[in-house]
Image 1 (tube, rainbow, N blue to C red):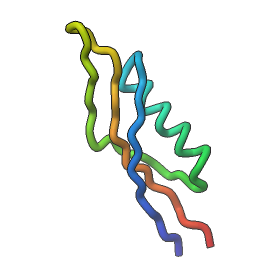
Image 2: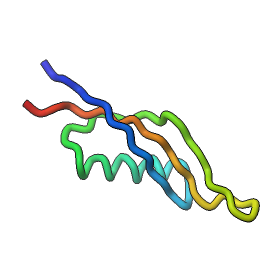
Image 3: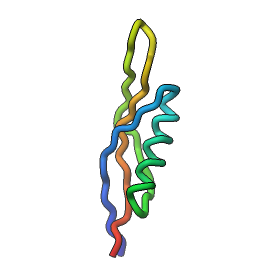
Image 4: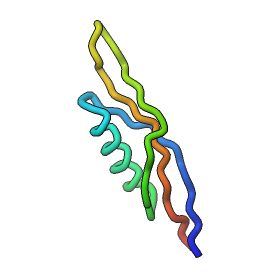
Length: 67
């Protein structure tokens, strides 16, 4: 029987939401063993001078706990 845990992370990108998601998942995989999936809880943008300067995503990352 496996037991999973969910952790929340915030990831950013200057180019797109998709890139922010990719950055977050890649970083989570470096730190957490057994990453099984992630879902986007929330998205945000940072605006300066009427232009989007940063994309932010709040990710819930699911990973399997080791025995």
